[in-house]
Image (cartoon, rainbow, N blue to C red; front, side, top):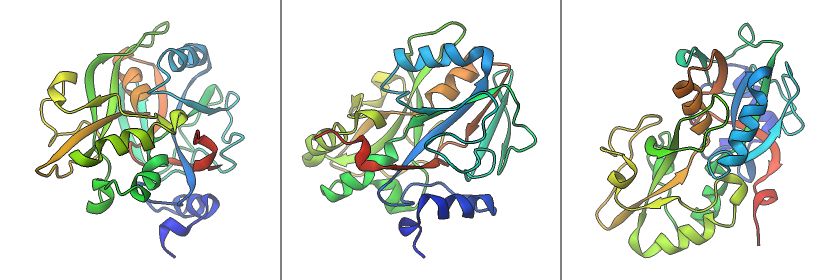
Length: 259
């Protein structure tokens, strides 16, 4: 079966069984989300950080301390994503396919919106999505734009990039802007140096993609931003998704579309 035609439950079953892959293009019509689980003592700070930086951290769901599922993710958060990243003292110490042994009773899981959600709407409007064309992970970059801090949490805005033909830039802005709960319209258009990106060919997360003549790079706020804050702030312990390897939740893309 084409991965685009899978249900969220079918996708989660495949990931639980060991499939490891970026999830762009999976489960058409179903929403994908960023995962970050932090110790309970940090949960309020993360909630406030999300409120203050809503473009990058649009909160879709949050679980109880120690929970392995949430209202929108009825699978197992420890096994049903295709990749995880474990942090200790702000450093990424492991990329792994499951985190059963690492999951702690004090961890509070947060699910944030993901820009993969509006990619099918872009395609339907005739806007190309290059990482889908090339079969790679979306490129993501740390910027020089600081997030609004909350308690001990601070760090840079992370963005994802999609190159768009100049004639379709306005269309891409309008289409993605209909989805404010999954990052909405781009936060920057054009020259990457303005936001501190020196080389589009060297993303901090994900894979580089081709930017062709006559195309403009568009940058969307990215849900990896909380993980960048975990690193910048030296958080004692946290678990996130491996960038681009998302939680596929039981909500429809159209649930987050504004008319």
